[in-house]
Length: 307
Image 1 (tube, rainbow, N blue to C red):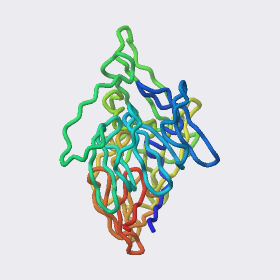
Image 2 (image 1 turned 180 degrees about the vertical axis):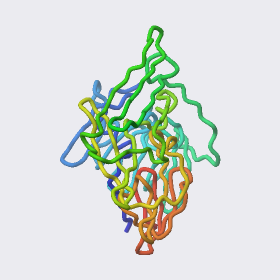
Image 3 (image 1 turned 90 degrees about the vertical axis):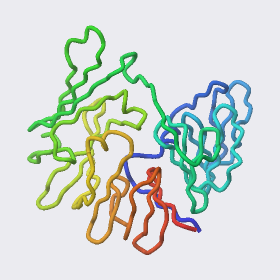
């Protein structure tokens, strides 16, 4: 029987996140249908059934709606809702946010498909033209770590914007004596929101601090009121080089860490649970679990054990 371990991490599946949003297509105005614990989709105006009410979860991105029955996924293209003929899909990972290509797991085998459901052997380059901050091409942001505060500096590039907007967060409210640094020991981070949106950018930032001899990783999430903090992993040993400025914020690009003789992927795994694990290739990494079982770990955080 297929076993799936869904770990508590901050990056959830895009199609699960989309359960909170109203799907949009050019051809249909979608509305959720519920019968007990089953879910489906219909057209709001005609009440035509687009996805039958027989699935545990349904979520959508820019190309598909993903219907999960508790074991397998069925893919419905947004423009037609004629379900793909591909069966026994155990897991799905979009190449990057807004991409037209998907890495799917069928049985124990990985395959790539395009937005039309066609299998492909090689991935072409993709170019994204997005405007997060209105019509401007650049929306530059900078985060600076000071002794007692975090500075969030925004420069939109709009004509007439002579000054940067600066938000100040008092970190002493949350950390009385500890000094924070980004994961790569830097004290500042610059990024462009327009160029990073398609990678799945979110207002989460990771810092490290020491508590005794332990290294702790803290998530700092800014909201309209202040910040939320959460210790994600403590007492870790980062064993592979990585660029924290490229990893956070940005598309899911986790790194391997070690706790004693086991390994994990930060921030997917709250605790190290693997005897061995490979680098990610596309949406998946090959692993050997601590009990010896093998499988594929997706960047969505699902451990798909071999059947």
